[in-house]
Image (tube, rainbow, N blue to C red; front, side, top):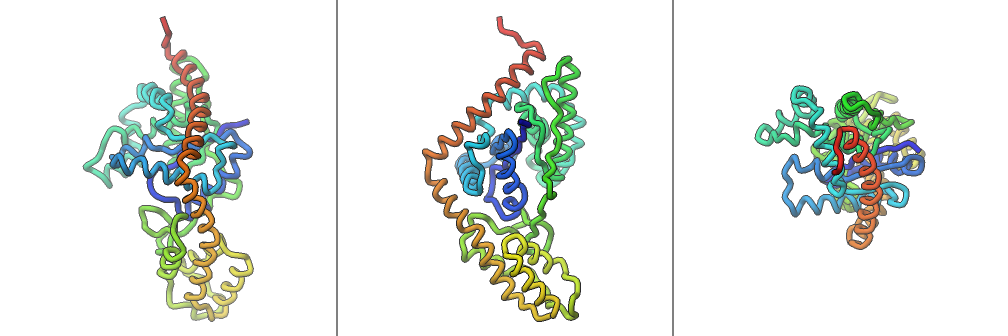
Length: 329
């Protein structure tokens, strides 16, 4: 069975973009692949989180992914820092990564531009740590967004470089995992691109009914159609995209007809959209609360995930260290 690995950010709540984007695909993948899903807490250290927030964020994200459908009996779900082999392989790969190629990565340039007061070497070698995450499990596939494709190419470069330098075939070259139907782009409520944490335009799985309704009712609209069967502007198409994700086809058809005959009332559309979003998210919210407050269950999940991941990682690291020339006396 081929291996798939994906990292999970360790800050902020999950929003509908996460849920309808990668997460629902992860839930399907765990039935057909040898899946490793990890919470990337080491990566988050580049932004220097406070120790109290650091642990709380990991616990929240872990609870939300479990509530949304990841099954620890079907996949290895673990915390990155629980796998010391990752850090050791990170050191070995850093010896093969060069300053110039790291400085040329788009993500590093963006971080320098946005946070000039915090240009730490963790940011510079972020792609190397990502490569260690992937290669330590000899993953065949990695689901990545467009912004991470350059990092995955660096992973392939480091895999080739290691194998060539040490005359071995320890690391396969991982490929981007392409979901059959293509990625789902979930729009934000402000009419400006996709839903995202930094944009402040998202609906989160942990939002309550009142919060969801307020957010949806404030969504950007226009003055309404003036001609029958006219093309929808982006801000309205965004609302219909959300409607298609959470509502019955008959509901979508109803509001399409109202748009086409110029009788649509945006207040009615938003109320229906908010109600249908709640049908999707509120049951997940209940599960999040139950899991978050069950420390014994979280301990079991992370312990079992750690053991699965370490068994895989230690076998790979042993091969890598042997290739480099490490020996015991």
